Length: 606
Image (cartoon, rainbow, N blue to C red; front, side, top):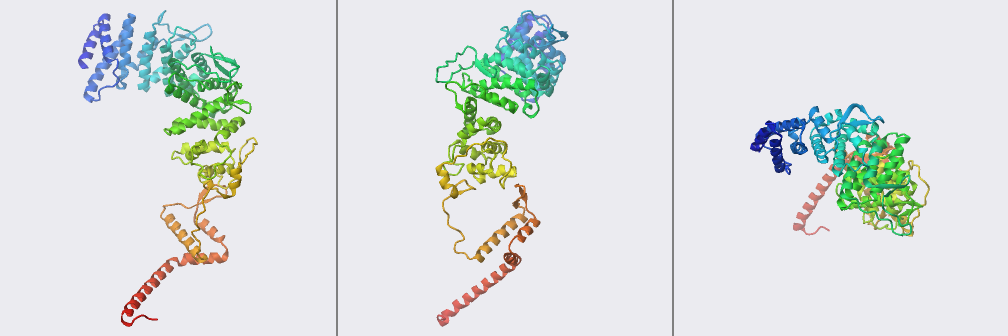
């Protein structure tokens, strides 16, 4: 490696363009698939110095008036060198980044505006070479990925403004897929690492509208109605009973669309936690309609489809809740899933997506929660969505023999999640079912069992029942005949009809029962004093609170006087009684031994 780099550097230092071109092309061809670098410290230092020197020479060449082939070779070399995160020092200066951004066509001309007051990009060539632009963009992406200083320099140079300016030309054919893709990739890297650039893109550059329009153009959409989206060139047959199948999107369109979705996610991450004005709300609703179309679209490859839907769902979760009604706005057509006169295609798709991720059981927090949260919030604010989801997830209860968490129905799967070790997963599953029950404690317990429901109820202070059920429409809770017949026999803790169990205290006197109860109290007391457990009690507000000695005294005072005296005596004499019992037992054993020895000499005593 050292010999190769030394030879290339020698050719570059001659300043001869042809010699440099041949040397760089040889190096680029050899290193094109090299993505790993030496880990030996001494060798790394030596290679690093040579790489930095080569980087400086290549940047110097780019400042000259070069043939396009030599420019391309220089940029390819920078792309390869910038893969090594430890040796990007020559490329993170303002001068180097300015040179690369000029070759990428995104350097802005400071102080110059067009006739409409817009930004003017620094012209690089009358007929820009797309290969040169792509190589420069790839290099900047590598550098910004590996070095935070470079990201700050990119912010100083207003690179995001230059990219946004070119994105406005999304309808022009002069830019190929690779230019558009790496424009978006660089914008994603910049917004992912700098809050200031996220804010600038969102506010100054009107990023939601800009990127929504770019997504619209990428997917080739048409708008039959204000919030109803179609695919240009796809005809809808009004007489067909089957839903119109959209042709799969090409790999290039899917790649660009996913980059747009990731950038939009970066700049809207707090949109559902702040107040939005009318203009912003309109832009978000327009975006929501496009995202609905994304959910109903597919790619050539199944993996691409799932990733595309995942990014769409993540972004939908950022939108203000008031804008989610666009999911229900398309007209009901032949083949659509209709409920209460509303098109439920998107809601049904979300439910299927969530259940698939649930069945896989891998990384539930990352893969399933976005769709589950979206369904929960949609059900909370849209009556039709809640009723539809309740019909699918919590149909009238018929199975009263099995535990709520046993079975393959979606209700059973979600109830199982309510005891998941991941707190976020179990809370979201419980919240979803609670909302479908209109936040009614009794109905929630009916479908999940008190044991499974206790976590959410305790967190909300609802263990005593009651509470504010929220603002929900009235709907009938039609019990099945099977449920009505078994209702009185259902154990509310487990949520099922339990088999009859033998009474463990059968045949015991009241004194024996009290003695067993006191043994249990003493065992709990020991565990509490050893800090192994913490006794809890239900507070007035319905939440669990720690028990202290004062609580125990109050509980004692509530016991009837006769029983209280007996319990106090039991508690006070418990250690003494144990000693007396042990002494009495020993005396009995001694007597038996004496009787046994006497019977051998004198015969039986009777």
